Length: 313
Image (cartoon, rainbow, N blue to C red; front, side):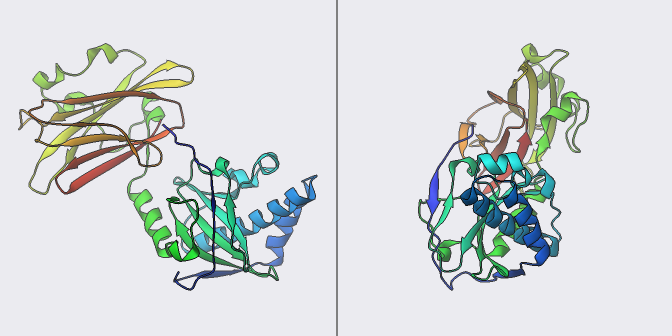
């Protein structure tokens, strides 16, 4: 489901982005960057790694100030082998994902973002490195690139990055692989507890078995009290692939799903890759496959209300 992209961001100077954050590039920052540079045989590659490291450290400092836990050691940018193989400047945010920290020199008009860092990122922060290399300025944030050239004035402020972190915390991904080990997230119950015996007859029994697991959750889809039961299940089909299914049923007090209820499967970029809409429908069933570590979302929409559940296989 992952969609690959490649582009170059043109990052031009502008005073339109508010709430920049300046970080002093201390001697300890330069010591770490120099250590990584010395591990590179190619001088140009060493310089790239040096600036990437300073950008990552600057964003890491900002995250600490904002109370956002990070894990430098888990970042690709902290792996000497991956530093050599790719242009990476990622920072792992604990339990949330990776933020890409792209360095830009003072007065520079371009920031190159290679294809390899378009995947598995929750967003990008542009970091301007001063000519003296004594300070770094976090210029702004974007969660995705809509055009091949993006001016600094088009970046969102760092407040939007904090909002993104808050939303990710509120909608922490559910690790389906843990379900196979008997570890279930709060709010997800056995299907028998949320469905009537009559509705249970509709559940796809062909997926039952020792290696399969399914859990259900009742979701409020409107403030008026409309509710549906979401059932998610998985079953390994090989060592590298899982069969995933989702089913939406009415709750016991209803016989049919609410008319015009929409159910979507979202890829890692939030794009709908599968969807269905209820009419006079008793249930909706969608099936797809994925690999361990792959992310997807399930979005349920009714009228002006939408609920999204995030998952990691």
